[in-house]
Length: 155
Image (cartoon, rainbow, N blue to C red; front, side):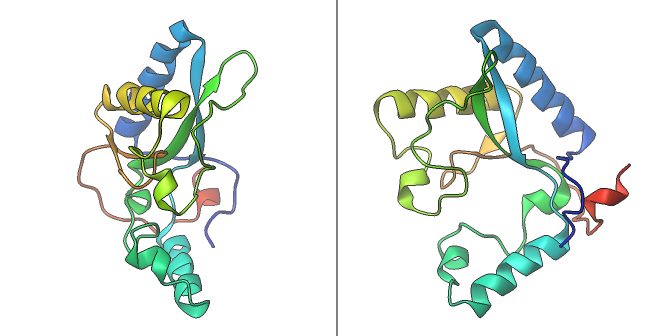
């Protein structure tokens, strides 16, 4: 509920910082692909209700689904690195939204560890913080109220 348009929205401060990251990566032939950004509160509540209704409360207990999410404040983004020429995602070891220790940012070796570290360093350079259980999850610092406005309303 609330994802009524295929767009990713962020607070202006976070969006501007993310654009700076994307532009800086251009010199290496890389860019950013955004999976998720602002999430209406109703969507977070639906995820929590699903977890409880289906016996999957473990995703909440283990920190993969939050009962209160930075996504609701518009300062949190889920993303990965891509090759600019092809749009191909760099190998990160797990798919986005993979809920297991394999997705923890530090749980990787070789090329995957290098790619995750490259993503973290690039995004941290503009002030974002990585959530260590999800290599793709970054929050921009600041205090904002949670919003429950469907994405389609932001036109």
